Structure formats: structure tokens, C-alpha cells
Length: 113
Image (cartoon, rainbow, N blue to C red; front, top):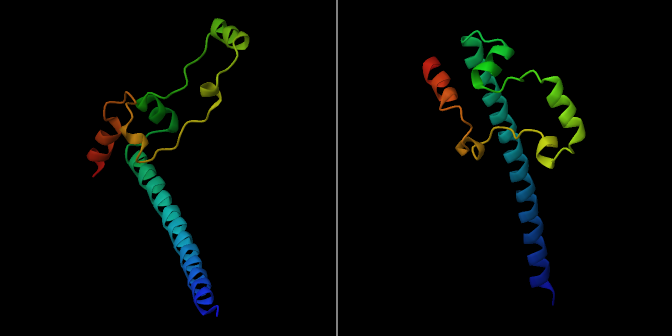
């Protein structure tokens, strides 16, 4: 009487197991990709003999020394959510944003390869 229902339950469990296996493989591949991406970036930086400070300056993201007046203004003003937020990691989605670097990273990569 419930053969069809039992068959569908069995099929559902098999599909669930395949889905979990695929998720695990996806996460493992993503970790490998991120590790290789980090290694590639570090290799490019090492070839240029940049210190972290020099790289930050070259990319235009170096911390600027804050004047005493700007420090006091910051204490008075409430920080916005954007100021408290951590920067987003580099992903394929973020490389389309205009960062103002005018292709500096592309130039670095092109010079080394």
C-alpha cells in the first residue's frame, strides 16, 4: 500500500546524501582555491620585494597619520555602520568595483607573468 511512499523516501534520502557530499566537495574546492589565490598574491608581492607598508602605499591603502583635530572630531561623531564594518575580502564580485587603483594590480600581475 505504501510502496510508492517508501520508494520516494528512499530516493529522497539518497538525494540528500549526494547533496551533502557535493557541498563538502564544493567547500573543499573553495578552500583550495582561496589558499592558491593567497599564495599567488604573496608570490607576486615577493617578486616585487615589497614590504607590507610599501605594498599598502603602492595600492593607495596606507594608513594616513591622523591629525589631533581629526581625532577629536571622530570622538564627538558617532561612527556609522560603514566605519565599523570590516573591509570585504576580494572576490570576483568586488573586482568590478571602482577602487581608484586604475589597474595597478593588473599591472603587477602582468609584469610578473
